[in-house]
Image (cartoon, rainbow, N blue to C red; front, side, top):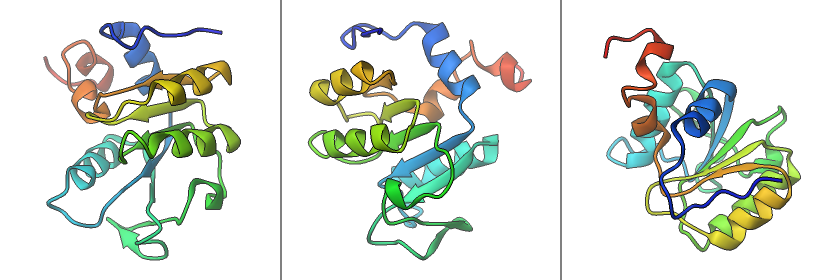
Length: 152
């Protein structure tokens, strides 16, 4: 089992490997409000080609950008590769427990979200963990652009 040193920058190949391997991303804390950061990240990841599943109990049953919003991770009826956490650092522990229960491979905590206990629990269960980073930002770093056939 691999424990990352989350106080150091993540190795480029670690982040690139995650972004290249995951297909279905459940975004916990997704919002239908276009002014929210989570909405913009959902839009970009969806447009990039990821199968996005918004999760927010307050918006469950409605659509965000044409995607049906789910009440919880456990209410998703398809395999989820990555759980993206757009919640508080405190809430990340419970979200991580759910991510492990549904068999996700990655827990990715958004910028400003860090929970070391959740990270250790996820890594002990065999998941990869990224904290305090934004996948949208990582996607457009120069090391990644050639994999998306984009000019640097």
